[in-house]
Length: 142
Image 1 (cartoon, rainbow, N blue to C red):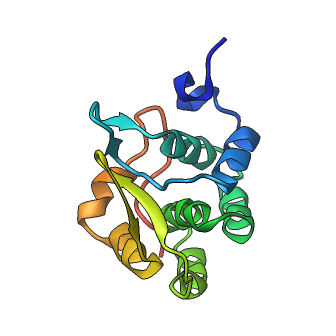
Image 2: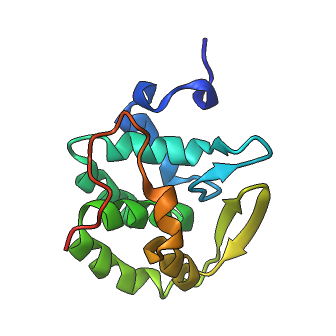
C-alpha cells in the first residue's frame, strides 16, 4: 500500500487533498529538501487545482483552513480568479500569525503580507506552473 507521500498528484482525491491542506503545517511551492522534490502540500494543492470545482475548494479552504492553508488557497485563487484573490488578500494581509514555509532545505516563517508579495512576484511564477499533466492556464485572470 502506498503512503500519501508516495501518491502522484493524479492519484490524490480532491476531498483528501482538501482535508489534508486544511491543517497543513508548512507552505511550500517549488523544489524542497535536499533532493528538490515536490512537497506533499504542493501535491495536494495541484490535485485541487486540477478539479473542475477548484474555485469552490480554494474559497472554502481560505475560510476553514489555518494560515498555511489560506496561503495555498490564495495561491490557487491567484491562478484561477484574480478578483477573488484580490478580495481575500485584504483579510489575509491582516493575519497576525506567521506562515511556516519551506524554501529549498530551509524551514522558516514569513509574514502574510510578505508571502502575498512573493505569490504575485515575477520570480515566484516559476513555482506556479502546474505539472505537465495539468491543462489549466497559469496566468492570473483579470
